Image (cartoon, rainbow, N blue to C red):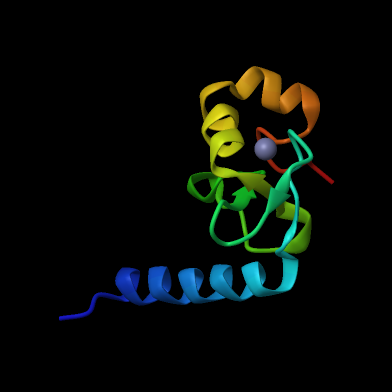
Length: 90
Ligand SMILES: [Zn+2]
């Protein structure tokens, strides 16, 4: 009983995991602190819900603490470039 949506989600998550291997460890885009798989993650600058992809350009290393902060302060995040509200129109 695996829906195609569930398969897509699984593929997306595998891809995301692979990007963590490529991009971590690194420095948090907000606080500059050390980020590895244990104390942080990759933030989708354009959120997954808005169609954000697992690309280098769309992923930013963040500590869990900063990820929380970014999610809770969208206006400040857009201003600082930690998040983007939508894809730029070509
Ligand atoms: Zn941080």
